[in-house]
Length: 336
Ligand code: P6P
Image 1 (cartoon, rainbow, N blue to C red):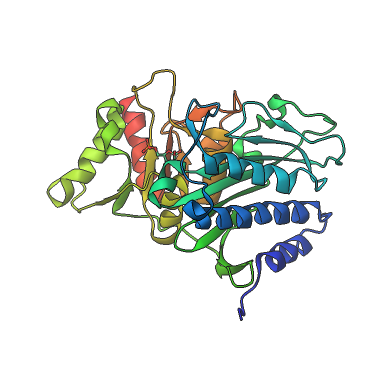
Image 2 (cartoon, rainbow, N blue to C red):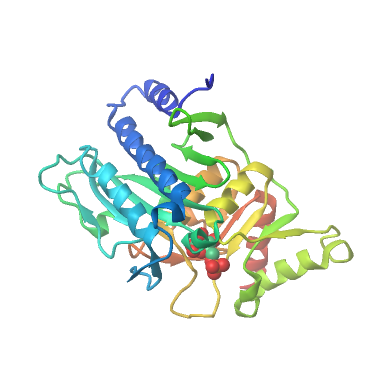
């Protein structure tokens, strides 16, 4: 039997500290948590229930959808459409926003999510996750449209992700630090196991997809070359490298032992300034990283201050241990 604080208790105690809280946010977060539990169960079942492999369709990004991408998206929608806390939703897997069906009441929040991040890992049994962000629906907007979602990351009410790894972990911030919860499958509850997560300011570990090296801009090439030069180079220390092809796994590792994660701008496809999406990947992860004492930038600008121009906008992402990220920013300044 667990003795730890459940996420439900944690959220309600957070609500009590907010005198103006109506309880609507708490109820919304509870519905999001339910979706994450259901996706965890589906991911853990895998081939046993025939949900591996491709769905035979593409998402708005032109990426082949896995059956679990589609299922996870449906789980998020079905867990959150009826509660009366949301004015609308937006997902990596859907071209346009999701309007709350007329038979359900609407609420004051907007939810964006990547229901299954890193899904190329699913068929090879490597870590995947879900990423979500909660915004306020603009005052007086009864029927939101896509542009109502286009708010800078500093306006997020909540950023969170779930990592479906050896343990299912949920990591959350509402602007008062970062807390991690482990799913106890025996009772179906997330238990507070990692209170007040913080990112060490220094690191000797970088995460980047080296196969894109020839497409990087000069500041990123310089930074990585110096890491690879190790003790004999200007950094005068050796570095380690990790690449899991799952942002949630990389960010969780950085929250636990530091590191720098980079999916920088590259010239592989000039129409795409980066691979990661601002609204439901970069912004919620940046909120978490900054709240844990880290830093998150495009190389030229703080990600959380970007004014979004499109629901599925892509951005370069460099985040993690503050002193390393600041070095990369410095290299961008010198380069420009
Ligand atoms: P690549 C997963 O598809 C994702 O969006 C991130 O989770 C991950 O960090 C990145 O893309 C992996 O990209 O090009 O290495 O497959």
